[in-house]
Amino acid sequence: MKREEKSGIAAPSESRPISCHYRTLFSQDKRGGFLPRRGDKAPLWSSMRQLRIADIAPADPEAVSAPATPRRRRAKPAQPNSAVNFQEIRGFPGWARPSDSLAGGADAVFSAGAGLALLDQVLRSGPDGCEPTFANVLRQRLALKAAETCARLARRREDEGDLRDAEHLAPAGAPPSPAARPHRLFRLFAARPLRVDAETLGLAAELLELRTAGPTLTGLAAACQEILARAGSPLLAAAGVSRAAMTVLAHAAPLEAEILALWLADLALARRLSWERPIPLLAVSTAHPALRRDGRRPRPGDPKWENAVAHVYARAAPEAYALAADLSRRAEKLIAIAPKLRAKGADRVVALLLTEDCVSPTRVAKVERLSDRASRRLFDRLIAQGAVRELSGRPNFRLYGL
Image (cartoon, rainbow, N blue to C red; front, side, top):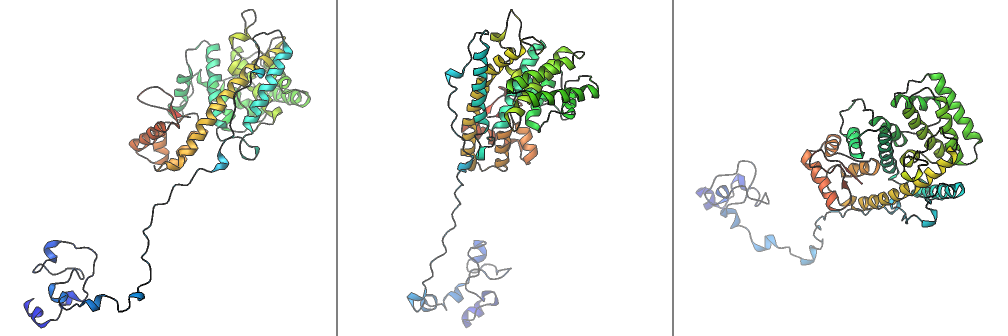
């Protein structure tokens, strides 16, 4: 080391003055330390003495004209697309609400028609006249209300929370309970496109465990198609289809046959109104106390069932409209804060919340391959932003939704 320093010749390890922009270890870089093991390091004092200011500074100051490379900045989050923003849903007008009197059939038909027309505008408020993003959530929430009504008619104790837990927290492949079967039936409106044919009726009968032969369902499908072809009003079509179902299924279990008739009426109504998919309406309000006459609720086999159908739809349409307005505001808020979420798979979680009634953190962690802690933190932030709600009301096995 001293011999090289006297001669003024740099050591082989000092072929370049500076090779790295950092120092690995102070003890190896100081004078008298160890030699570099891999390539050059900071030079020793012997080579630094040979450098002059003229060797470092450029001869022509104007030669260095290239600007320094700007520091890369973090990209700003993209703003939510205005195409998915929803139209403002105003309050349901008072003139379209039904009266408490059951005598006026014309008033019930008018209220039902006005309510369905307003609901039709909501279902066509998406881009290019299509359904809004929250339409499936609306169907599943109404399916839950319809299933609760069916559970009350069967004198069962399950409420909305129990039915929601049975659907979203039950093990995969587990058979549904008797109270959960109507819930599965009405959730078909959001799960798949349906037609009034023998295959659709067979699927509905299987969910309700109706032991009905295939020719019976084929005859019921043919009768329903004939009614849809010749019925003028959508209300008359819904009433005629449900009455035909009760007539054909006269030997089946009365309550299950009535549930199928109410479900089929909503399907027929959607076909006449040219909706993309049906919405549970008739079973939601059929047990309303204001619809009782002489202490008895209306049934599809009653003589004045057509008048009762108008009253029931007049009650169900404002409730569905109010629920749609609430879901529209919540969905718009969720879409607005979606670009601010930095968690892994946050966009897919937002898509699930916009199409499902509720989502569990366990399901999100399994689908998106997240840890349980990361999944819970994502939902905690969504709740803090006011975009989602905790629907179960308990500290464990929580469910989140709009």
